[in-house]
Image (cartoon, rainbow, N blue to C red; front, side):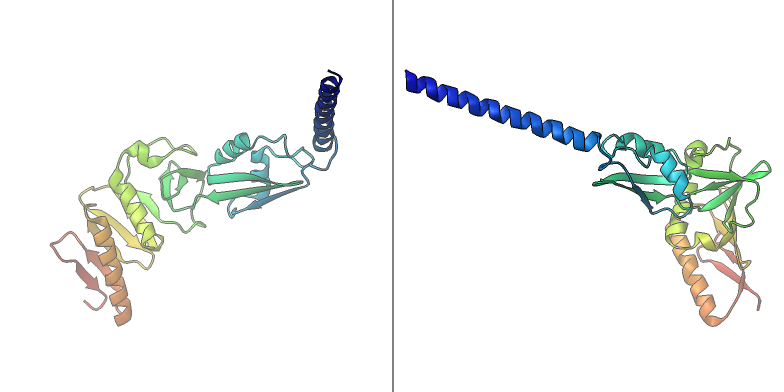
Length: 250
């Protein structure tokens, strides 16, 4: 009986000792983590931003220098950053012991839409990034001929006008690196979209069917004319099966 009692007593002491150690470890860990400045944020790094300033992103992140790194709410911070119109995606990471890394993917300015006496700047997905008084310094293609809609930063124009063909034209034109060569695009006549390049070539594009094929064909025409040193004044896609090219020599 004595041996059994002795074994039980030793076992109980070991158990209590382990509990005591766990409690001490927990207490010490808590003190180090929350009662010292070892895990207080000293550095906040932002990468991926070109349009937005460092300060605007950090302010939106809800992270502050001197704050305990464990107390920041990453989900809330990311959602707050995504409310910035130029932000497409973002990620906040803890870098122990005292650094926060914010990675952002910005939306790219793609075109402008006249709006009253201002212009709305949109990305390729149609999101309104900003509204400004002038677009002269932007050198972005101007989109005209769409129905009048209420412009608001953060809204999507394609969802409002409900024209998937315009969305396809903008996206494919950007993918083919052709959109940035356009001065303006006029969508007024759905049966004949017209645009002008920055070097003053007027293109009667016709309807927005087979957009990728027609834009790819247009690129080949420009490349061929450039190799031959010929300047096109007008290109017609709406006068038959094959494009008609009017040059300075004609």
